[in-house]
Amino acid sequence: MGIIIDHDARKSAIIQQSIQLFAEQGYNGVTFQKIADDCGIARTTLYTYFKNKRQIFNYAIWETSNTLIEKYATILDKDEPAETKLKNIMGAVLQLLFDQRLMLTVILDYILAAQRAGHNLEKNIAKHTIALRRIIQGLVVTGMRTGELKEMSAALATDLIYAQMETAILRLTISRNANMKQLTRMMHTTIENLRNPVEP
Image 1: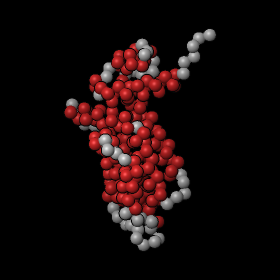
Image 2: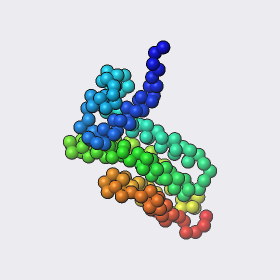
Image 3: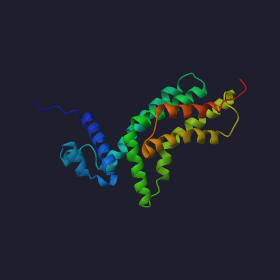
Image 4: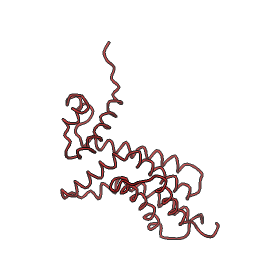
């Protein structure tokens, strides 16, 4: 009887090992052969799962994005006030950032290397962040309509909330002094400051 290989488990292991290598040596410093060697498999075997290292990188981002999308849907489906949903959405984002700190470091390294090489990734970055911005703005608009949140520029309120996520990313990857409780308090305070002082 032949050996049964769990291809999903192997694919996941390849992704995790690749992210570790990218974090240690930089995206540009890792070759497809290095990934194969580190995973203890032949390069031809690696090709059965991924065409190149870029596909591995993109797949890791896709998996992370899908995890967030599922969490967004669960939160948005609940019958709760806009403020609560905003806090829960951003809480899910913060938790994922902490859980995926290594991946976050790799992404930042990749973006900085691309910028140094003269590549403009603005459209790619926007593609991965636009969904969250739309959700935040939608909840802000809903909160204003119900009287839960004060009248303001929805775009500005979205930027204020989104800026907290950017702060978390910088603390996680650059200064490395991120504290989940502190960042959550900052996020909640920002959202609470949007409350309508007059009860709806």
